[in-house]
Image (cartoon, rainbow, N blue to C red; front, side, top):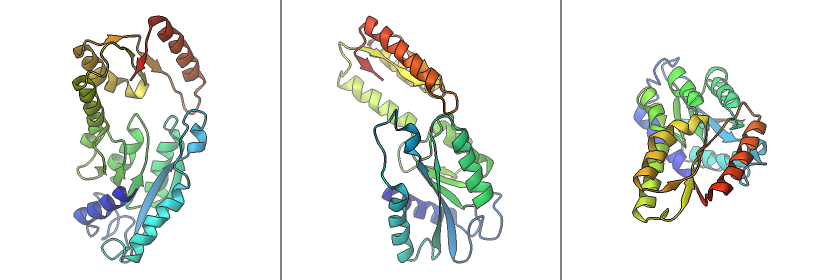
Length: 246
């Protein structure tokens, strides 16, 4: 969170609120007045995935407020106080993520959206940065999304998901971590292209024995079909002697 807020300050300073993002209303840009900058702070609703993910970030809004209050106490961004707008979304499917995009950009009219914003298809991320030309500083960003967005509007404090996956695969190859293992690859529809382009070719290059690849179908917030598919894949992998998963 601290890294993200630092990037926010730097990015807005570089972009310059005087001109604002392309297409933004007003001389200061959408969400910007002479004394305030309206930021959309997005956070995952972990209650909707508690059956599948044994993890949460606690009270995310209170965590955000610590940094916002500290930033404002130090004069804000370029002398403007941060006006936070908090919104939660469920990361299963992308209906809520797309709704969050329109809420931030059309209803709240924020200058920028910051935080953890997940849509494996990239549609929701591009809804903000490309369709509404609003600054977006988030985690888990694919290079292809950055390439599709206007320059400087889709940013991340991390390396891209593609680069991170390549680094992990390179380390596995260098250290021969998968030697003697039988590996199965599990993905969902929206991430299958990344598997086809990066994972499968690298595993073949490593000459790693592979089991059946599993692709889960997730429709909206209903994970019933995906759970059934996963159970089926698990039984198949047991029969194949799979002992490692990507």
